[in-house]
Length: 155
Image 1: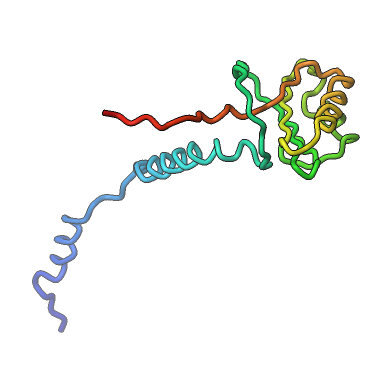
Image 2: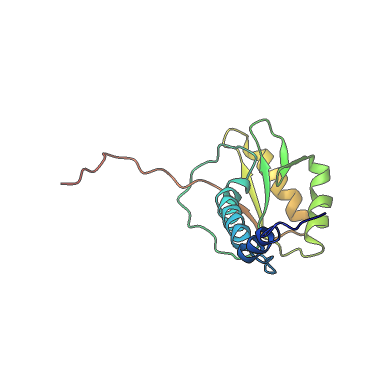
């Protein structure tokens, strides 16, 4: 003879009463937190990635150029290796690669960065090659001179 125990089904009914229903919404707060952290990381590291070829630029007191366009940099390092942005190229490869990048826009501004230890003729050879290819907006990049003199003390 089977007898039913009183309250046997009561445990399950009490558990169901306190159980939460399944969520039908996505919690986006962790996603937003991760995106904000990534945004800050990229904002900090992006300016450090702009120029990758180290050169010792000469100093000049000329005023900075104003422009909104994305500059193309041609760099000549101390060993006289020519770089287009961060890629080493020969003088013969320079113009075809530039034309492929600018796509027939010869009014694109090109910045030439030359190490101060190389001779003037090397820089002029690169600038002459750019000019002969039809690139008229060529600018030389220099460093602003560091202030010299006695240090001022506040008082």
